[in-house]
Image 1 (cartoon, rainbow, N blue to C red):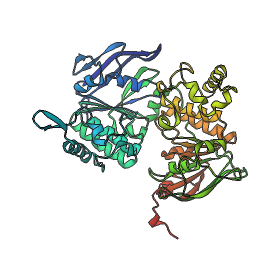
Image 2 (image 1 turned 90 degrees about the horizontal axis):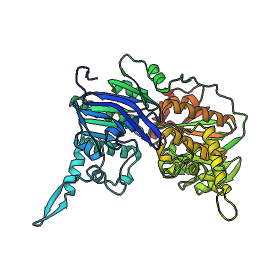
Image 3 (image 1 turned 45 degrees about the horizontal axis):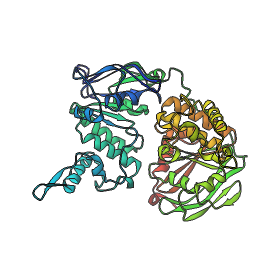
Image 4 (image 1 turned 30 degrees about the vertical axis):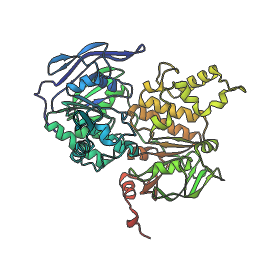
Length: 512
């Protein structure tokens, strides 16, 4: 890791305050970034990390405080003004236009032009694609720059966002959860790029909840809590338990709970021979009441595709589904919900929430009819009291149930999705990456909630790419590779090594 201790600050943020609708998001915050440094910014969801960095990127203007760049006070009235000064940001939420190509998204507003006739100018598509290809080559990213972004996976879209940020040749680059949707190989490539940037003197702010990443890549760590600066520490020599304690201000219980025996419980869901092209191939499994069934595998293994088939979100080529012993023909999500099946998507922004609506509307959205009278009018008082009950039950941190969901942290948004399905009283729940992009404190709360639901007799399938999470919560673990089920492990026999062995067991290696 590059040593940066003697260098003067590239960025110096002092006494930064920011409030939204009476809620104090930042309170007297400070942050420094050195040239060639990777500075991790940590804190629970809602701690103010993204807000502070959006102030630095010109997205928000501070209510008070000052920002110094190379020792000179600067004002950043807009993202364009920040970019002009060499301050770039890769947002946690993707800001891409699906109908445009990868190259067009990267260089929008800065497209190369060529002369047309005597006075006219036209977009130079050849030069545009060549510039994007050069970026992708630098990133070791096998991607055709002409591909429409809407056709890319979330991971590939994230890499396009990173390429876009790199194209500005920023002096300071803010990366907000850059690896949330990346696999290990893509993360390794990102780290290689980061080290290249460090060597050129670029300062990088790295926001992530993944402790192992921060230990590998960062020089210093700044911790925030409740919108306030807590401490800045060198990464080397600082225990992760110390950082976690500063983040949450309380002790986190990460012990593995006792796994109950559910063998005597009735089968809630049985799947036989479920198939859809190469994505899901002849998958069979059963799920009992009160059980948490972990579904592990590498990206592209077919886990989400399997859940979507059961939920009726995608058509199946073959296979049978039984719910509580009865054969069912689920052809749509509404039919799945009617059968008591709920699905919490890995992409909560697009498939789990209506982010433009408020908390109470999102909570009751899947059960609206129960709040309507014969004339179709909603009972607003009942909607509000029901939403408030779930806010209190799940400890959803929001100023009120009328707060727009988009203004809440990722952990609280995830709790709202869970509240929606709890209100619908589904017996069978699919949790797809339930803790992606949320902090360790919120993760712990989600873990306890899943365990409580299982104790109440709910049957749960949990899809997760985090093996410690799978091992901690699952009563049994199924592993997939390239659309096929490659093995099953009990909670007592499962290890990360055994899971990875099954997750890489390609069809050509399977013995008869």
